[in-house]
Image 1 (cartoon, rainbow, N blue to C red):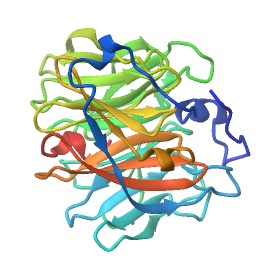
Image 2 (tube, rainbow, N blue to C red):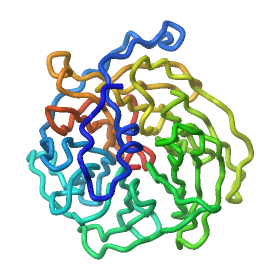
Image 3 (cartoon, helix red, strand yellow):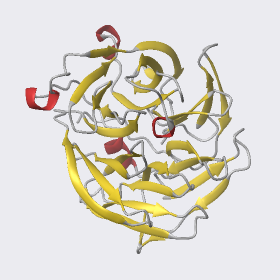
Length: 339
């Protein structure tokens, strides 16, 4: 992994965050990993540049794209310093963006609207908190803070079930290089936190399948995607490794799932996404044009318009933070809209 700048950033656990947002150059999967559909390339087109590298933090990193009820796209900038936009609202049609939230503390790595109270939830990787905002970016509240089973979280991504309970990928142990990560369930009132899986190697992406039967989650430092079958009572029925991603230098970042249960696995270390069926078949690769890829180092996440197939991917690197669009394989649902 090529090192990124490590300038002081509001108390951020730099080592862990930089591992999450690591850099690289290229990925080349083996024929077994690619599957029959691997020759299908989904070409992403640049929509706009949203951010430039921040002088104070030495980088910019876009994450957590999610459409609001008005069809505007919200995006977080993980490394934005105090006073600069940590949450942006984007009009993709007009290609305009504006700041809707900032603070002097948070390093927000994901965003998603709750089906329970309609608020926007953000994970603060650096401080272990989950914060919620009103849809317009106001009225910030700390939804959850503190220890889970004796240890604070490094919450990365999140997913909601139909009732509004949260499921969080906790990348605890990343900075030490130890498999201490967890999948944590937090009830919708923010009062009870339960560990559903532990001993994980830097879990990152997390998303329900289209039928809410179970959770897909990726482990950054193992380049694998696992499936957690739930028992319908807040617990786990079974767990198994489902897909091994032959990523080369790149690693598994966030996950989105469309209406046909296809998985969009973001890659950091390469501005691309790998697309798999629920049965593990490599269906396609989403790639930015080669002439633009040199200054871009990570594709972190994607939002597919609910009920449509237009997808918007967050991509970042030394050239800045960008939105790219492509045509997804199926329609967008809640599991491909934030997290």
